[in-house]
Length: 248
Image 1 (cartoon, helix red, strand yellow):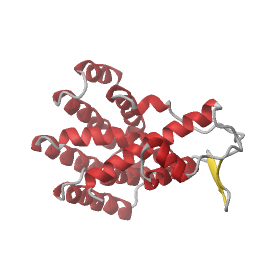
Image 2 (spheres, rainbow, N blue to C red):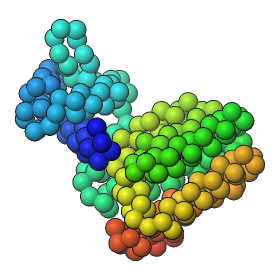
Image 3 (cartoon, rainbow, N blue to C red):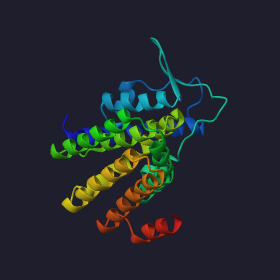
């Protein structure tokens, strides 16, 4: 599948997963209810069965549904502890996606600071390899979203705290759309792309230098600069950027 088709499939699966999750959380689909079959969901939503499988996989990863051999997929029993979830409307507009990016900004500064204190040499080398993977994806005409998410995932793993890995894994389903928007905007201008490369490298260099304050600064600055590039690209209004700076 070509990159644009793959991106479209990802967006469709994200939206179906969010729609089904909303039905489960609202009670329209109750614990023990059987989900429609792949074929039924495919026909009802005008999407491929591959997209349906990816959406159901997302629901399984959140423990919202379970498979029963030979019977189908069923809504899981309500857990004792409420699973973390965002309002499904976060993917319905650019402004709403930016809300999730702001959540990322708050988290990733501290994650980067901890990584600067705890990352091993092998983990830092892995981050540098991932930056090359991002560059390769761009050179091949792909958006580099998966590689960029992988880069930030490695920083989370370098904290040595598995809860950050789980939290970032949860956020990825929402961050993916925001990152598509930011990277799509940045791909329109070579100066934007060069700035992103420099920001990524400065972040890794700070982690490698065992400088938590610098790592925190570069992580937050990278996201703020990404928002500024969205303003310059006409994707979001400048008032959001000014509000973000006041809050930092």
